[in-house]
Amino acid sequence: MKEPISSKDLATLIQAISEPAISLSLDIRRAGLLEHVLGQQGNLNVQGEAQQKLDVLADEAFIRAFQSCGIVCAIASEENDDYLAFPSDAGLNGEYVVLFDPLDGSSNIDVNVSIGTIFSVYRRISPKGTMPDLNDMLQPGTEQVFAGYVLYGSSTMLVYTTGNGVDGYTLDPVKEQFMLSHETMRMPENGRIYSMNEGNIQECEQGLVRYIQYCQSRENQTGMPYSGRYIGSLVADFHRNLIKGGIYIYPEVPASPQGRLRLLYECNPLAWIAEQAGGLATTGRKRILEISPTSLHQRAPYYVGSKWMVEKAMAFLA
Ligand code: AFP
Image: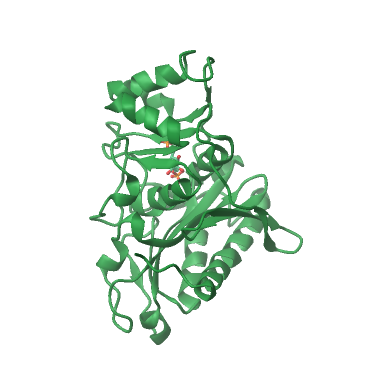
């Protein structure tokens, strides 16, 4: 049985996440006025995607915060090719590794649409005092001890779990503090929202095509077509479905044969939040949290959301 994170370590990590998140939130609010915030950096990241200036700023800010918090020995981020170990004394003795997507949905930055940060924390496997290694980073999602996201939406929220339910905190921009606003969040067991990039539907497997037809028909439990909602920022789509009930799908498609989403930075942390709130997260066939990762930037097909909706989609795939 996994030992829960101590409240002292949790407080240290929340502080490490909150500081850059609050500063980013303030920058995002003024994005159109700040030259260093809008637009592309001119590089491609390891996934071959164009990096936005804010991707790079956010990545650097979170790395600095984790490095200086004194209990993290290594990080891996969606924006970097390899993991980064912190070789100082404090770093080598750090008990945790953090995997994160500094700015999810970054193609939405320039058009003033919600974006997010996603993080996932594990206890290291290698002994303290030694250099952390790749095995520390490649743990199944069941081993997470702390995971969550920051949503930079119409308000900024921090939502997290340590394995004992899910709580949401809203940023008070005057006090520059996250305040508990959504205690013990529960995802409705069923819903009437489906979220998927339907531009891909003709390239999807038949089971999924039929599930989407079912969502659009009067045959579902509501007797009415579901609403289609797709922001294109996973954190924002997930957060809406967490509150209202719904399903988010990113399947295998020819352009992304393993799906588009990254298992370690995106799927695992949100899968744990979903399960802790009463929802489900699968590849369409198997539980996300039980996948043993083999590489840092591994992708996975993703079906996440209200329990009955994910089960129904899986029945169509089967
Ligand atoms: P970006 O961070 O590159 O914008 O990717 C966002 C994302 O990983 C996820 O947040 C979205 O739900 C998904 O990709 C959008 O992908 P499509 O544009 O293929 O629908």
